[in-house]
Length: 116
Image 1 (cartoon, one colour):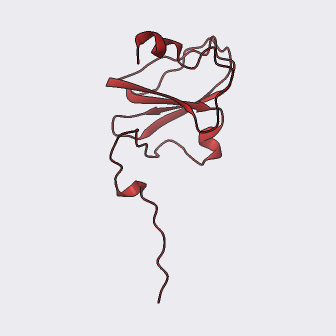
Image 2 (cartoon, rainbow, N blue to C red):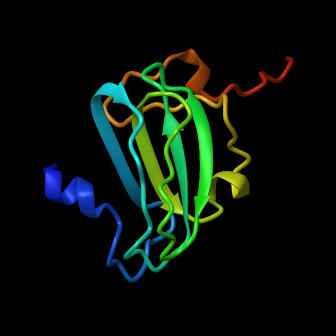
């Protein structure tokens, strides 16, 4: 992670494979501004609090010069293929467990036990 890689983000890439994306991690919560100036694909972006809660989701369109920022300071920004969050039923308020974190019980799938 370098300032240059962070500044470039997903710009100048030709494609983004399903299940791939870019996670920006901020040491202290902030309100970063994203611009799609040199990005040729639609992206879904989740702004995530330091508590791991998705606060806001935005759909960003190619080459858009407007700055998009979260309404509240965040510790993570996750950029993935356009429509990803909607396609997977993920909306603000959902929990996010960053790589390397210890997921709590809510992240473990619950399978009903068959009665004997």
